[in-house]
Amino acid sequence: MEIPFNYSNLAKTLRDRRQRLAQFIHFPAILWSGHRSSRNFPANTFPFRASSHFLYFAGLPLENAAIYLNEGKLELFIDEASPASTLWHGEMPKREEIAESIGADRDFPLAELELRATGAATIAVQDSYTRQQQSQILGRTLTSAQALEGIDQDLAKAIATLRLSHDTEALSELRKAAAVTVEAHKMGMKATQNSTLEAGVRGAMEGVIIAHNMPCAYSSIVTIHGEVLHNEQYHHPLQPGDLLLADVGAETALGWASDVTRTWPVNGKFSSTQRDIYDIVLAAHDQCIEKIRPGVEYQDIHLLAASIITQGLVELGILRGQISDLLEMDAHALFFPHGVGHLLGLDVHDMEDLGDLAGYEEGRERSDRFGLCFLRLNRSLKPGMVVTIEPGFYQVPAILHDPGRQAKYQNMVNWERLEQFADVRGIRIEDDVLVTENGSEVLTAALPNQAEKIEELVKEK
Ligand code: GLY
Ligand code: MN
Ligand code: MN
View 1 (cartoon, protein in one colour):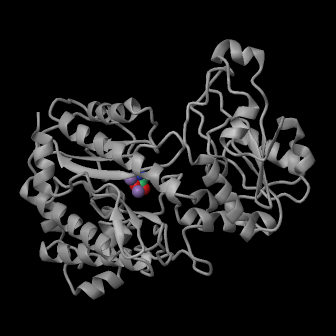
View 2: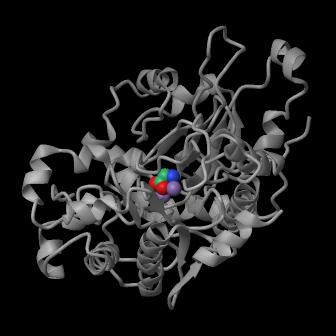
View 3: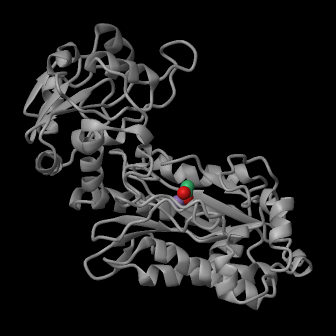
């Protein structure tokens, strides 16, 4: 078997990344790729996904591997495939070949990694088997992302600095993920009229991604209950009059993500109430994207979305009062309870394994306000960053039926008027946006988001 990847610039890109890392840290680092977890017996496993920090510097999704990064050099530690593995999985590439394709300076069996342990920093991976290996080799217990300290914290900060702004190779991967995701959404819209369940649309969308030999970047949300923010059930029948919210994104073979949401009417025509709210969410989406450029605070983009949604809901008679008072009271968060987006890269919520270390600029902390506590990114935007913009409107029973919130917002919500919007349970419109030198580029712009265009796609045979 050959290495199923052929990226002419990969080795050079990886060399550039580790040399940039060496400008930020003056101690060695070991990054582990992770280990496959078994479902029941050892050979029946959950799909493997390499740690993103490993992928950033090692390029390929190697299993049970580690890299030692020091002074701009990379050493690869991985075992040759065993005869038993060759029997079941075929010939695997030799360590030397892998090392060459990623431009490693040297390569060794995994057992030799302990010779490099002294003074090395690391970042804990997700699977517990590998975490134990990390602790054992480094001779210390690894702390959680929230409690990172010493060289591990310095390493995390350095990696976050690099991963915040994407290089040419990363952008090329993000564009590939975006292009396939756009096709998946178009297919989902077209497949809706012939689907009886949410699962049928999900199948059509993921089928496009799988046919491009990609996995999904996260568990797909394809639901008529868009008010359940991370709904992962697909059993509901599709009924005329329902809105279907689909949040589905592809991930490239090298691990780069896309994250897109569209919401469309199952029967191909928005009701007037659905259309009213849809256009408010779209206005927030469009105006937020228009504001994106270097130097702009992402929190201000979030606040802009909050203000446009508030104004729209006041005009529809759902909220009442002065816009500024409503915003100050976080009344918009009754219907838009999450942040306007997040970083996107090797992970869909990029680097959130580091807590807020990547998402929040140094010295900033998450607010505990209802309208800000789910804001995942609070930084001044820089060229090369990719962020999502994903305003929404939801009628979440857990929020709207909460006695405390009902009392607090009693006079700010026209509850009777709200009842007329019962056919709008959840709408989100989400795109992936690159911050450029002068403004922005929507990587997923090829997917329509205007109501009429969406209706046309749903009706298309
Ligand atoms: N797909 C998860 C999110 O939009 O954040
Ligand atoms: Mn998102
Ligand atoms: Mn999403």
